[in-house]
Length: 218
Image 1: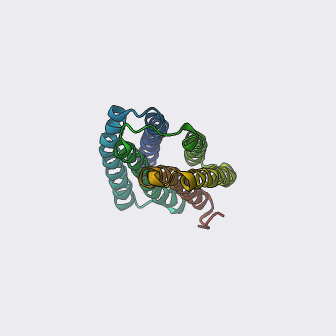
Image 2 (image 1 turned 135 degrees about the vertical axis):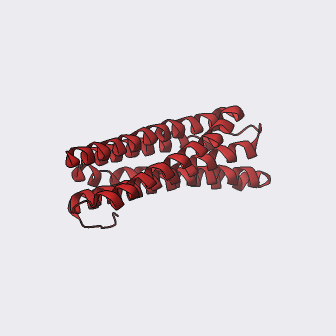
Image 3 (image 1 turned 120 degrees about the vertical axis):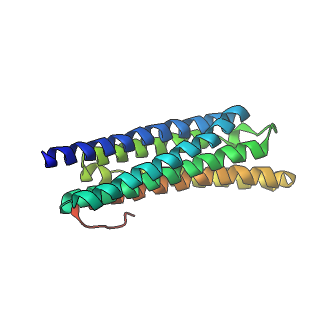
């Protein structure tokens, strides 16, 4: 009976991680859409939403620690709880980047932005969301092989970032007076690139959860 209760609590904890991750996926899509459309109201909502994600991180983290302290889990369960604790932290950090993009959007204001400077942001967001969705599926289904298949997607995000950077530099060569606000666009794309890196961290923890070996992924 005690084991059944513990297993139920573990599954419930994982479900809470899935729910939080799903919200972050949606917010990542929304923040880029708001950035592209200069939707300041939506940007403000997404900044506010970061409070909920922070609360979820604390709540899930504390529940993980409580189960470790009270149930004395065996090796596999211990790795799952440690992974859960780390993954919810990575999800919260991804949302920090979302909040950062929303703040940058507000800083730019209503100034018209040449569309070609933003062309890679939706592509980066879509690829990062795909990575996050797969990584959380791997966590939920204890699928180390799936987690190990995700890093090539990060290479795609990096390539989009480099292309975006080159586009911005080329534009500034002819429009140096736009330096400040165009530099903010570069920071927004950098946030997307860093969000994808955080997903790779999640993948590393999923592999550890299943194998007991923690190795950084290239």
